[in-house]
Length: 122
Length: 243
Image (cartoon, rainbow over all chains, first blue to last red; front, side):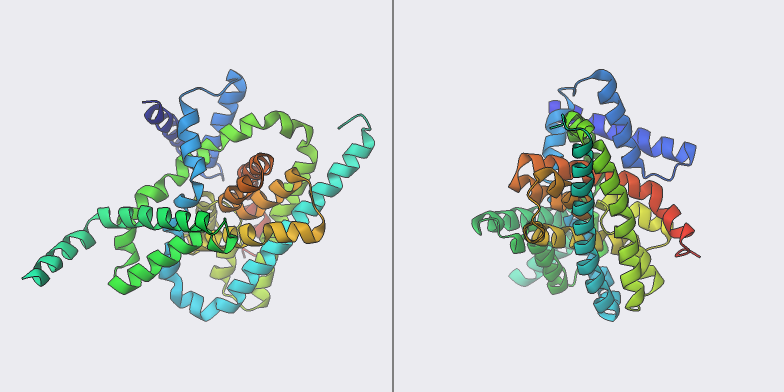
């Protein structure tokens, strides 16, 4: 029952997110708005309700599985991939490496900068 | 005698969502087992092997993606509640996050700008069509959000979904090597860079390295999804990529 309650709660937040995004005309996808709303609820309540924990562990623990149907969707784009395979594959590879390296470097750099300013900080 | 019966069974199966759903779960659980047996070889990432197996199956049986998706949509649908569920690790890591909010925020905002512009710029330079460029722009954003953004900016949501998966796999496969080469040892830094670039697939990989790297990766995935959805349409129109 806990699993069902948990899934239900997540769906309610997603629904609330989808509805509020449309009502307010926000540029954010519904599930992201639902995530923000659940996060705010958790901050206000100060703890994670027992009901959501098993459901979210189950979903997040097998997150890779949820990407499989979308991945199979490559099959629909074989034509485009055939014509544009070079730009697409070079972009994916280079841009992924660049983004990952820059993000890591910036985080490391700012961490050191702020740590130096506050010597008592761990 | 047997032939027509098999035929009738196939006609039933190919028209029912049962087959697509079952095949997805079977392919994934076999792929996952193979992955564990290989000693978690990143090249045998379960998403790669199960997607490849399913594509070969669809081609071999001449099944359309729409028919397959009739069943697989039940798995795909769960991406929505899974996105909502990201609030929980985010909340649980909030104390750690509070200490590093400044480096994390600066790193993620930079990551969003670099991620979006490097993909559009490289694709444009190499002569990709505008639709392809726009489908590539949100390639680092977790699938449900990436698809929504792609639709909003004029890309092809289903192409974005597939590119998101490939980006996730590339990051999960090269991440550890890249961090070693760069001499980065801090798991919180690695996690942020991994989740920023390779969303859920990278996060699944990060959790194998350490719980800390996984939590920071999940955090980066959630926050960057939020940042991308707020800033990407605006960034693209301000910079003139969107006419």
